[in-house]
Image 1 (spheres, one colour):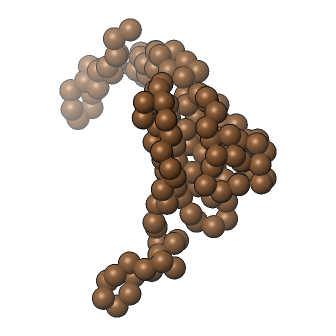
Image 2 (cartoon, rainbow, N blue to C red):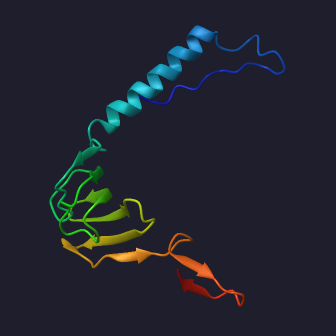
Length: 133
């Protein structure tokens, strides 16, 4: 379906535009079309005790709330997983420590995990050099 634009009418009152009912009907149709296009492609948010970061997973976010994660930089945290077979990327946020990591999959092979340095894991000295916290 083509996007349905709401006619706001002529300023300042917009009296010649769409009625509220027509505007909301168009808005509802636009959202219904978007959700129909996305379908289940974004995947559900899943929290489990045994996330395997190397597993074939649909796009989505996955949480490992205990020490059961495998092939991840830490044993517990949240995995954001974006995949377009055979390539994709992942972002890992550790629980309670502020550390973040990322890696990519290219040609079907995952790279190593790389830590993302943030203000939670670094400090800046008087000379504006970034140091490990």
